[in-house]
Image 1 (cartoon, one colour):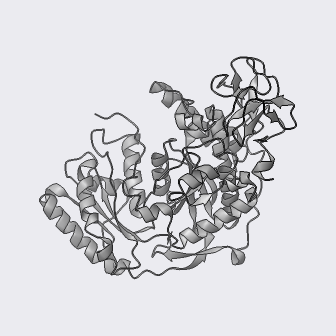
Image 2 (cartoon, helix red, strand yellow):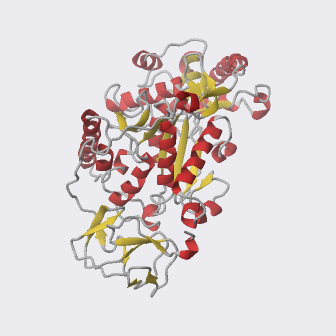
Image 3 (spheres, one colour):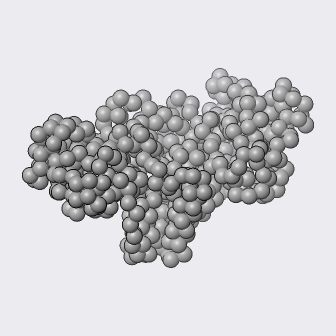
Length: 509
């Protein structure tokens, strides 16, 4: 159905609201409902189609998204002025919707041109990384990487670049505990990432995150592809930069010998993220992403959903798809942990949505979460991972991360994600080396406005030009093409060196 033919969308027969897909003037009839808008309503926002009493639930997607704080009449705008979040008992129904996946036979699986590493991992990019163990060595790490300009790297056409990652932690806290373990696990995950041919660690020397301790704790060993030293031991900035540049110069010829070759899509580990969401995100980009994830999983691949604080209120839809009670209970335990963690820090797990989300039509975290979970597709939930833990299970999995985009993506990259899809309604410009980021716009207006940054326009679903399944197939092909070396918009801009943001847990001392 073309957008011009309809003004609103009802997402489920049980809903008592519809979503405006165009700006509505006061007095606009709501099709098939007999309601008339009482005031102007912005595209993406909700309109009541039935009388809703004070204290009664608001339904969207066939699920509860909030409670009316006063009586709401048909045709009335439904948003933060008359809706609040409400706790309610969710039926986890563990495993009730789990179904066997219709896997595509190995001989018929989709392929992409990947880079097979010596240890069997498959890369989608071929970088050399310079990683600081602490914020104090971040600038020096960048100085080393910045030496390798496009002119120098032109002699190594199979090397995608030298990445100087920056970070802002590594000291000022205890040398133990969850926060410290997360930082070390994140750095080690990047060091092991298949998209890095080799890595150079640069420390200051006196930091809490001592290089030798980190290597020992994470099982990393120095060698031809992993080097580590400190600024203090090397003799200062100039000597450290010289030493680092010499090491990378010795790496480049070998790194350049890699060749891409056809490999199964089963070697793809997809990180799925949404940020700057709007009301269209749960209607277009996220469910289309879910359709693409289902295709990837049917081809033997892996898809990671994250952002624990942004599945809150929709976690019951995931527990119902859990492959086992143990997997479901891991997810439930995470929700309980986050409630306690937020309370301990004087916050609430439901302090979302952001101002941008609200401007786009999202009213409560329950509504936002229901849209976000649509990225998860329909297959079984196979496992639940800690932040930055190596993802080994095939299929659909979940990783515990904050809702903050960069922290969430950092965890998934450390877990092994070799391609990322980022859905957005407001727009974003991020990239996250060493993994390419495909950005999906939820609406056509934003896509046109930020065309230089968006890779795919999912707004054409509402425009009537593609169905969800067609869009899912298109996204899946874009994933394969990107994994084969096609540059994303963020790669053309060079984004990704400054987006390493491990989740910070614990006190700064």
